Image 1 (cartoon, helix red, strand yellow):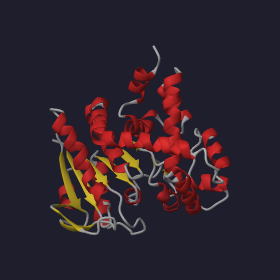
Image 2: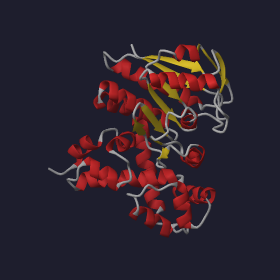
Image 3: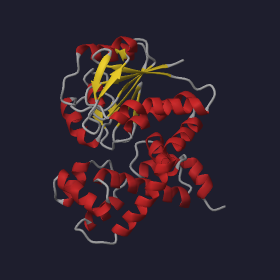
Image 4: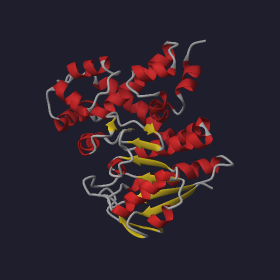
Length: 317
């Protein structure tokens, strides 16, 4: 049975601690032959880990770094302070895992912890949009993808955003047991959110009819979906700071600028799948995703299925 070690640092969001067990446990319950041993490891040794301010509580974890020594997969969740230098023992554990061929996933500030090992030098990686500048500044040998969508390079899987941990886990599940099982697991976990996302989309469409001073930038985004846009690029076009940009986007659309851009990309991808015969690879590129693999988890969260299955269901016969 593959062992997955979740290396928890102080300040991690509670849902990042529970997401691996939720994804792999759900897959195991629904699909015979799927089995994982998920170990929650306190990076400072077995004991207490402090959760972030959204859940101001302590979590007592039964495992420590020693229990990650032979793990097949190591996961670094997001945590509170990306500026803290990781402990040498944690860095050694990650380097040893890479040396023996283990896969390593990280999201949010956990990507900066992974980058501190030097293992991401010369490789592509991404993180939460608010950390992309710091990742590029502190680790200039890392090729930073500003999109925040999942990036796979060698044995490393990196992602950003609220659902970054789930993106990484679903990708690992697909690699081990195929896309069908990963897609079904994603639908089971997120089907209520799909309905919510459709309702949010309707609200956004109505809101777009209003004027708020963002019209030119919104039109520019529609024309620029193929570009690797960072929040700073959008803010520069709007002539405001990133923080002001997000306040204005939230007031206008109910979403931050990066989330709104992702929503536009997915909407365009759906339109192209419904109306054209372009291959999924070309559609991913036209909508700003580095690859079909980067498109797939976000598309699944919105529609509950893969791009190819969506096309088969929605193209007129």
